Length: 176
Image (cartoon, rainbow, N blue to C red; front, side, top):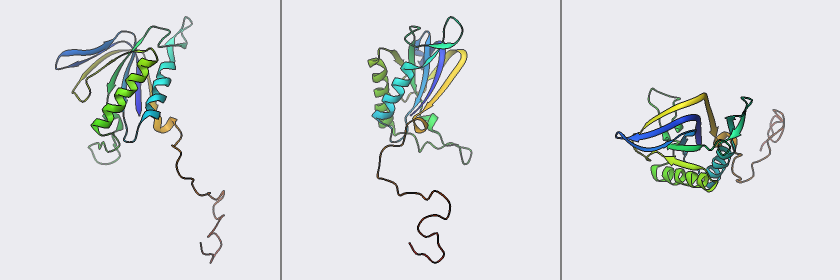
């Protein structure tokens, strides 16, 4: 999962000209769900976002959390955060979760934030939305669970030689 977190004075989402969600002070959060994401990623991001201390205190330092400032979250699903732009001129979205999977884990992420006492509003999943915001700072942060969480435990990997040429097959004529 990838979350782009924008500290805002206000934010809102409209669909076909109608307001579907909005917040005053808090975060506008764009969330991209990757293929294979699940409970682990959703819980990790919900905890990290709830605990982030990125609002200024009396001395102007980022030292206050969302709860400290009475803030809320406007969460918007955005599969385009998983775009692959490495080749050609058009992005591919093969790394993004399928729509049903994306909706499931987006909804679960929102539920986990609410369980932590965070007021959360959302956009309209899968709709063409207009997101308007007043970024405070500006202050924008990126959390990507692919970089932040250790790989899931799987089968043990073979030992890797500590130096090139060390290990089985490194001697001339030796067969592995």
